[in-house]
Image 1 (spheres, rainbow, N blue to C red):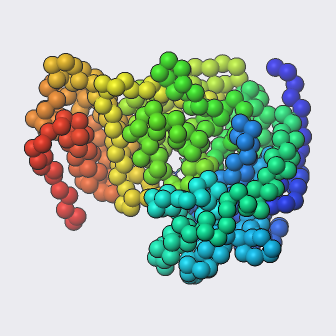
Image 2 (cartoon, rainbow, N blue to C red; image 1 turned 90 degrees about the vertical axis):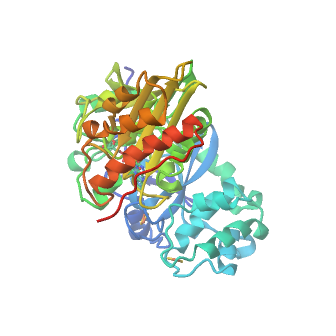
Length: 493
Ligand SMILES: Cc1cc2nc3c(=O)[nH]c(=O)nc-3n(C[C@H](O)[C@H](O)[C@H](O)COP(=O)(O)OP(=O)(O)OC[C@H]3O[C@@H](n4cnc5c(N)ncnc54)[C@H](O)[C@@H]3O)c2cc1C
Ligand code: FES
Ligand code: FES
């Protein structure tokens, strides 16, 4: 492998100022740095775990030569991941002639600022929305604010302000739009193809030059922590005070950040975020669209990757069950050696995946189901938006001409120590007529496949019942039956 050049500083632009940081620790968050080192205290700390949105800032980066700005949670975003970006905080917002920015003025006039503490975060999320959609629908406003919590329940005033922003100014005349050309030129110049290495031992962080360089670095330091979007790893630091050094930052790496389709297989690089994957996946596999809309809020979807959702091995990650039902395969890489395995085989036991030291997730390959294949995924949570799964079921069915089930793949999250297929249920359905009687018989098989746990998200009984009812729902939606289907009800103790 050709020798890569290295440098020892993270370069980015903060509002209007060029930054070159040489003393960055792996666990330094953008939020702490903004508030403590730069005295930019408009960005607030509420939860420090990516939930409340009080810390929302924008991060601009070049994507296929275009400068795009996305909202992110500064509390779980590490400084080490910011190379080649433009960080925009609430202090940078201004309107023409020293007036308030249109987003700010709308928030004032529509009484959208109530407690004041959460307001900068709301303003930044609305700013991101206004830039990409100056005349947003009510649904678009709701989606853009999924990751911003208003504890005084004043959402209506904020939503009214969101819909009125364009009456205060044109997005094209936004001060940030005026500086965009200069910023894009500067960011392009920062991309020098170098590996970044800062510190040593417990202070060491590396940003590989590209995916090949990552393979080489991780092969030599298999004990390092890979950090992709940091929407899980960020919490290890802020909530569990875990030491993540040495850390290898892989967000936006060339060779890991593409999504493409070939011969009916969608290949998603491990660094592709939910936001980046959304348009392709929602178009080609529509059932995944509503699921993605319920993963975190915009800030989490702009940072979090599908690769990270798989690699973390969580039993309640939202993407593994549908991808398993679809028959996805995983490419794992160590150095120059690659191997491909069915995604379902990756999950061995709780906290244990089929990943060797120095090996990383490179890509996941997802077959697009044909028109005659029925596919659905259902997520059950306590509240609709920005909530972690209690149970999630994914179903894929192909019916033969005679109406019998020719292919069935069912996978669940939240029902076992890993994302898991429901083999006994599948066997009870396979080759049988797709009728309610068959489904009722198959529902008895759930007890063989799963022994769910009780935790803060749901009781074992609730999970078992919900899982069975999801199969009934899938049957109702795919059979076109008009007869009412009797669902069992769960009575809380
Ligand atoms: C507020 C909030 C809401 C959330 N809501 C949801 C939700 O609704 N549904 C859901 O499923 N999850 C949710 N999550 C969890 C998280 O967003 C996802 O698991 C996300 O996909 C993790 O991806 P990441 O890129 O941020 O991973 P990171 O945090 O960077 O890494 C996660 C783990 O994977 C490892 N890793 C990452 N990439 C690779 C790779 N390429 N090869 C090997 N190892 C790798 C890391 O070392 C780490 O162990 C939420 C998180 C937050 C903070
Ligand atoms: S402080 Fe709550 S999301 Fe960052
Ligand atoms: S306006 Fe801040 S919590 Fe409602």
